[in-house]
Image (cartoon, rainbow, N blue to C red; front, side, top):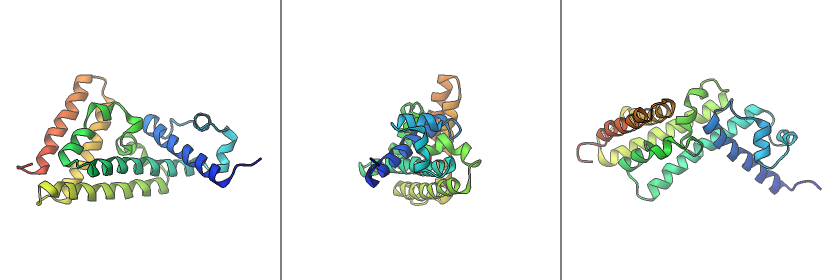
Length: 192
């Protein structure tokens, strides 16, 4: 007996969610379709009932990973977190040490430029939304904050986490997170 539309949609969503996490952990090229389908509890052959190509999966999974990143920040904001708290959490050892659950930008920025147009468009949309969000966040404590300040914050956050994950010296990794956190605090204004 065939799967219902609801079951197929649920399976599709599960594949995309799992792929989003695996992309953050191992990169786009580190994802095995066979391994992904096995983890989703489906057969390898079933992949093409859900996606026309691997590129289609990449586009959807990147979009999902970016949406998960936005949702994490939105949840922190709803819980009352301001700029300093969001920066501190982003630049925490916990975030650095959990790429599969962390920010898709820090995990995948270096790969996105080599992808097709659709994933790059999703990435661009996410970066624009992040810039707008960080500018609003900065202006809560520093009304003079500019788009350039938001650009600095967003790129420094993602870059710091990416580099902190890449270095082999744990002390240097911690120093990167702490140093960038201290410098980004200045963007919030003198009274923050």
